[in-house]
Length: 244
Image (cartoon, rainbow, N blue to C red):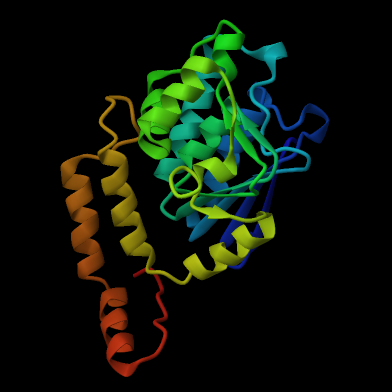
């Protein structure tokens, strides 16, 4: 198996486990990741990481081709946006090519300062899909996206802190944050994620219709969790959200 799934209460850990390939992904690995996403549907937070020494060094070039591989990769990338819970990319080491794509697909990113992001497709004669260009542009900023996509050069995480990288830290600190985030109201998170995904605007995103986004918003307002949140605020205590 190239992907490990572990549970820590409401937090699901998905680990790319191909250290001998520096966690480069092939078609089989992507299929396992898709299965892992299905298993993680009930998680409040999903943490995606890679076995040392890398987060993901890219695609395994021995099996990369336009067609099933690229289609499956795009499905996996969009799959993180379909997760109801928050997705965290915990990066320690290189996150290049498909690694940057996977990091961009997650909601938030924690990275060690020396970790690197980049899309070296121009050095290989390849080109990434429009979803990736739009996502990296939105998440990292268009200037950083142009630099990575057009020069093929990598950028250290510390230089992207405050934009693409939300927190500087190791994988353990990402899990500490995940435990904190798992206490937030799940229906609110789901509604906000659906709205965010629907606004990517590239025509190929894992988007939701206006009606679906509005239904999710109204469901959060009408939920028992909304009542609990108001009561907890008035009583000056932490809320206990149950996702209903």
